[in-house]
Length: 101
Ligand SMILES: [Zn+2]
Image (cartoon, rainbow, N blue to C red; front, side, top):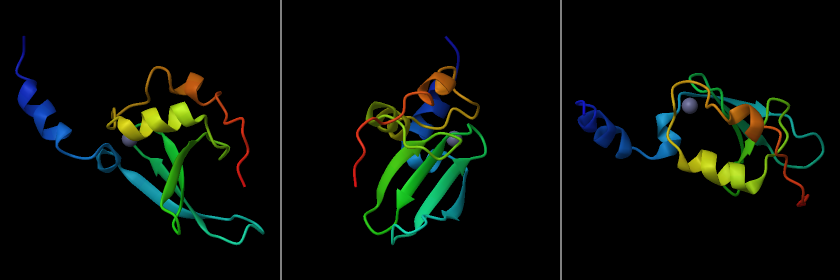
């Protein structure tokens, strides 16, 4: 037993998304008619893309390719680890198969 429960309770009050230290940049989505935003966390290195018009957000790998929905769901549900997760490299190999237009 240690005294970490206080800290954990405080972290848990914040939405997972807000626990990350995101750098945001506008991605060039050539020809698709809509700007996208790229989020990359300077602490854990996870990256997300978002369509501002729909607020749809998904996990991407370092090349900007969409990851499997299961990875997106998990990453959006987890608070920032403050360091790269042990399975993140494996997660980045799980690309989304179904292309949605
Ligand atoms: Zn993070």
